[in-house]
Image (tube, rainbow, N blue to C red; front, side, top):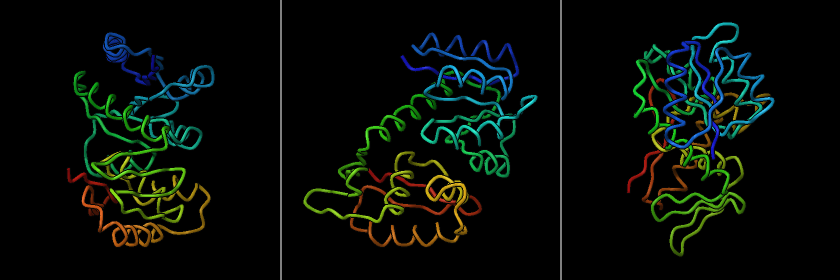
Length: 224
């Protein structure tokens, strides 16, 4: 059974979210602020984190940054009452994988959770199927039928990240932090260069495209 952390300082909402997740087969950890969430995670590592942006002591953006650094494969669903482009940019830059605005619709929340869990399982299995195209994490290969290419590590990791979360927008800084590391000396233009190379090499694969999202970053789109 999968465990989900719900970090939300609105206690009635937190209780409602946890009850709904339990009803749908998940175990839950509940925290009212970022510090309490970290204390719980030190004891039990959840499979996914649902994090409210506005919390006392440590807000959701700070918590997401810590989780993304310490547990890079943990899916993070950010919940907030704000839905402006700048708010979303800040959320994705902090490490969030997906975004849910308040008031929270529980059925919609469950759809987001299930989608993130599927993506997480694909990443841990080290194989990803997109239409008829297969990405093999261990071999760094992209294969469709009899055609196969081997990519340099950074290019493959970048493609695997994007295709693991189709339609999810990733900022350049977020991709830099996750693919090149928090202490990378390269600037964000490095991401643009690698995206350009990937587009040229992957033109032969009709199952996906890599799209530029003006003002935010990049996302992958499935074509099948």
